[in-house]
Length: 390
Image (cartoon, rainbow, N blue to C red; front, side):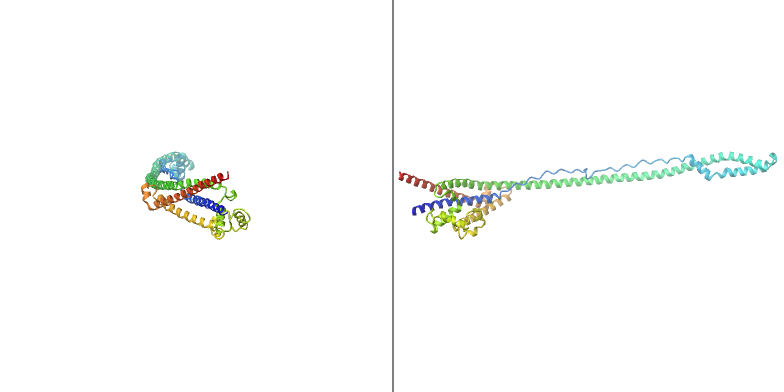
């Protein structure tokens, strides 16, 4: 019975040493994989603006129309003016001629009315054309003078508009040149800012790439040892000491605690570890789900003391190693890809990180080798027992 108990506790300890290290390695990889950074996308090259754009179009001021010529005064206008202002002249002449005719031709023609009418009509016939001719000549000169005055006024207005046009053209050119200089300066600033951001992003990405490469150098050997330990653990389980239903860290830790505290001395039976484990599980005195245990670690200290101690110690080791990684990766990332291997080795943070993980990997290798040796010894014992039964 004592030999069977010794073999069982040895088996449990060897399996648990792997289980604890596998748990710690898995959690360590998860925590440090979260520190893997993603490079920032490089900024897009800016498109240079132009002075003439949809939002700012250079427009040349429109040239004013040529000064129009004053239209000549029409004959109807002259007739209206003669009728309104000079019609009294031929009438007066007719009256005077009629009076003179009455005085001088009264005896020759006879009567007082006839000479008056004849002389008045004659004076009217002669006076109207003469009046119209004189008036027209006078008005030609007056019209020309008025037309010249009006034309000069129009020419002055045109000249003023033309001067304003040239001023507007000059101002528009100056405004365009000013806008062009502003656009050129803005493009220069944009290009300078783009260059700064591009170089900063590029340096940042170099640092991220170097930090990720260092993370790979750290985690790759741990992942390799983890795969070896999982394979070794499967071989340990295949020894058949414990029923496959209980091939997990929680059950193995409780079984070892039962044996070491003397609560049980055998696997099966009413007082065996199987029965006690199932009873405490049913009574909710223990927790069999590892994720629940990790979330509520302090709650299992009393009833699952072995498991509490080992997981608590593993968590402390994980935090310590992760802190070393944080410090080392922070140093690498902040130096933005400007580090050589010699510089990394000489830096305290990265050197400490490398040393800590070298020791940790050595620990995993040692654990795996010890369990492999246990497997070889167990195989030899099984072989002797097999030969003894023959």
